Length: 88
Image (cartoon, rainbow, N blue to C red; front, side, top):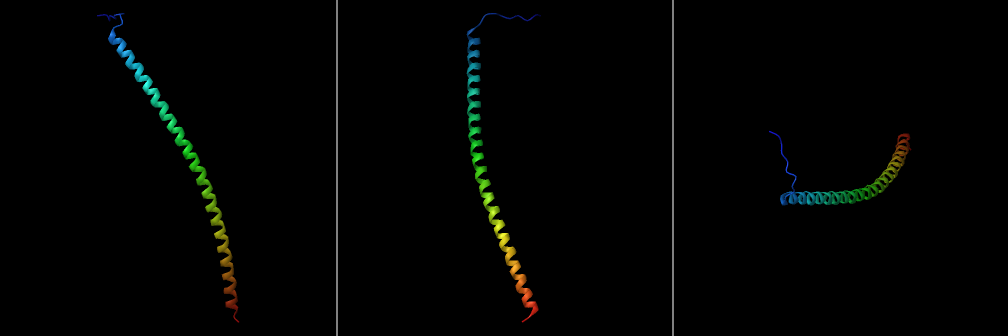
């Protein structure tokens, strides 16, 4: 049995075509909205990363200063211990 196609366009065909067009437009709109949201989130994350880099540099600088102070304190303690060990 061969397939037979009716070349007429019915009202049902038009409704299906309109539904597919509307669904396509809605999908495009949703994708565009999601893309815009992702771009905004990326910008927010970029700003947060930049501010975190500044904070990390500040912490590293403070830590380096504290390490240097600790080294000086330990040096002073060694000198004091050496004087105590030598006696009066």
